[in-house]
Each structure stands twice: as C-alpha cells, then as structure tokens.
Image 1 (cartoon, helix red, strand yellow):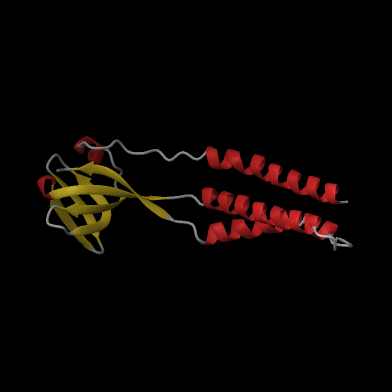
Image 2 (image 1 turned 60 degrees about the horizontal axis):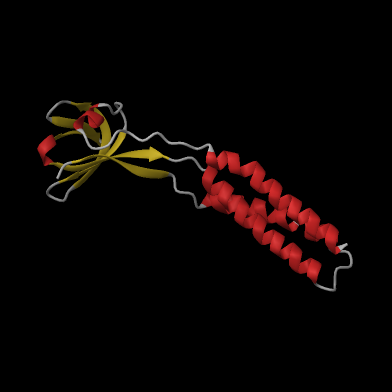
Length: 164
C-alpha cells in the first residue's frame, strides 16, 4: 500500500512538471531596443511610460508623440512635453502574464502535497487514508496555483533610454 501511494504521488509530481514546464518556458516578452533615441521613437502611441528627469522628478503617462528633440505624453488630463536633454531615463510599463506565477505556485504546492503524502505513507496509521493521501499533491498544486495567481506582479518596467 505504501509503495502504491508513493508511486501515485511521484506520478502526480512528474506529470505536474511535464504539464507546466512548456507553459513557463514558452513565455517570451519582446524587449524594446535599448539606449538610443531611435528606440524611443519606435515606441507605440498610447504606450505607458515612466520618465525620470535629471532634476529628480518622475513623470508617468501615456505616449502622444516623439520628435528628434522632445517627447510629448499625457499625464492625467494634461499634455506634458519633456526635452531630450532633460531626460535621464525612460521606462515603458509592460503588463505581465500570470502563467509563470501560477505555474511556480502549482509546482511548490504540489511538492508540499507530495511531502505530506510521503509523511502519511511513512506513518504506521495508514488505515483508510491511502486514497486521501494520494490527493494531497493535487490539492497542494491547486492551492499553490491560486496563491501564485493572487500574489502575481501585474506590471514591470523596461528601460528603453538612458541619458547620462
């Protein structure tokens, strides 16, 4: 009975890794070109931006237009223009998917559930709990996936331009 429970839990852990690993590895976020003003000129209108000026001010808004010497964006209901020589850094705000956080949570939860299954299988009081113990990795993986989804990071900043 103990071997059966351990074999089932090992099968569930391995199948979790096989199912989730392609989803995690297949994620690829394209990064904008870094460092040149041409990279800034290549940004899409409406892109969320965060500008850090040389005087220490940070401005957030959506891109309206870019010329050779300045950038114009909307901040709240105002249109703001910043000259190229005033800007220290420009970041784009990119929305992230939740697949990686969910997959990582499922893997960790499944591993914890498998540990619980092994602990139950190693104990002497296994009468009638074998089938329930085999479900621990599944319950752990589902719980971990929900926790990963709840605590995921929704955005990240990508540095596009830096002027020293």
